[in-house]
Image 1 (cartoon, rainbow, N blue to C red):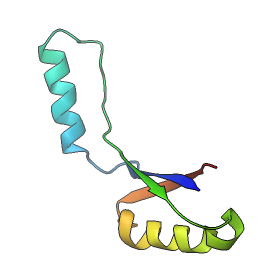
Image 2 (cartoon, rainbow, N blue to C red):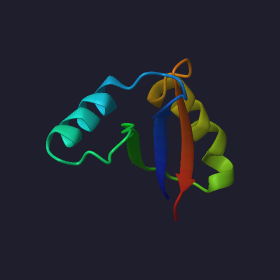
Image 3 (cartoon, rainbow, N blue to C red):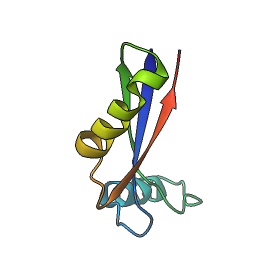
Length: 79
């Protein structure tokens, strides 16, 4: 089974990389870009059914892939 784990900064957490990209876009003529947020996507292949691995995937996402203090995550389950 293939899954994707999307990790994003929490609302209110500054995103300096996103700000730098927005400023670069504005400087190169894309002045209508107001905000950019940079996110991470982990594409992971796992064995087992969703029911049997759900707790493990949520646990390693929380403990290893995302920093729960400043980031949130969501899991997209594939086939």
